Image (cartoon, rainbow, N blue to C red; front, side):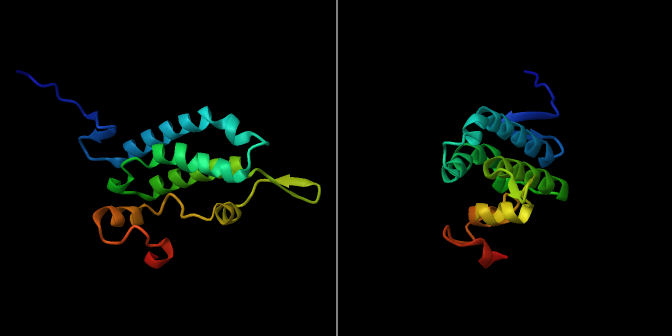
Length: 145
């Protein structure tokens, strides 16, 4: 019996590479979450749906696709930047622009995270510690900073 040697393969939904590079897996997850986002963009843009419910849509339908197996990721600064950019793109779509006087502008990052009022995606370190059993499930991010 002969086995083919490959440089990467998908096992249980996770991309495994020969050099154990998690950046490829993170990029794959961002692409899959982007597909989910574009499938739901009409719901996120709808004016008749309350902002609270669009955040629930994001947290239940898009974020789990992105964060699958995130506990095992080793993040570089570039990976953290890509995850943050993706999350802010979604939050900007949900919250929309703001009108100051007669001029419309995009919300600043601080405004987005204040409105979202949850920990950002880059705080995977906390999820990894929880996964390993070092902190309880109800521990808050502020405690572990």
